[in-house]
Image (cartoon, rainbow, N blue to C red; front, side, top):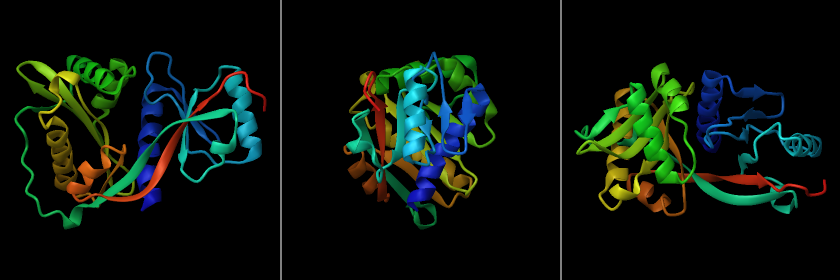
Length: 243
C-alpha cells in the first residue's frame, strides 16, 4: 500500500511536468524545474545510489536541477552533510469500498475550469501553504480534466479553500493541495473540501483514496477512516558543501 500512495504523488507530478513541458526523466530520477512556481519544482522517483547522489549534487551546484528532493523515509540523506531535512509527511490511505458515509456536495465547492478560477486557486494555495503556486500551472492542470479535478471553496465571492483529486493508473484517488486561506481557518473548510474530494473518488468508483499528511493532519484524517502506512521526507540541497 505504501508504494501505491507514493506512486500516486509521483504519477501526478509526472503529469504536471508533461503538461507544462518542465519534466526531465532519467533512468534513476525525475525532475520538474519551474522558475515561476515553487510547486511542484523538485526531484522525485529517485533510485538512490552513491553515483546518482554525486551526479545530483553536481547538477544542483550548476543550477540545472531544483533544490528540493522527495524520497521515501528509508534513505541515506540524514547522514549526508550535503542535505537538510525540511519536513516529512505521513503516507495515508482509505479503502473506499468500506466507506459507509453518504457525503453530500457542499454548495460552496466550485470546480476550477477557467483562468479566473485558476487565479483564485493559485492565490488561495499560495497563501495557505506559504509558497508560490503559479496560476498558469493550475490552469493547464484544470483544463486537462481527464483524470484530475481541482476545486475552490468560494463563500461570499471570496476564495477560502482549495483541493485537488487525481485518479492514477492503479484506479486510486490521490488528495492533493488541500488548503485553507488564513481568513477561512477554524470554519471546517478543510474537512468540507476533503469530504467533497472523497465524494469525487467514490462517484468515480476508485479503490483507495490516498494522501500525504503532516503530523497535525494525521489525526484529522484518521477520524475519516484513513490508515497510516509509511512516510516520505523532503530534503534540501545545501550549497557549497563538499561531496
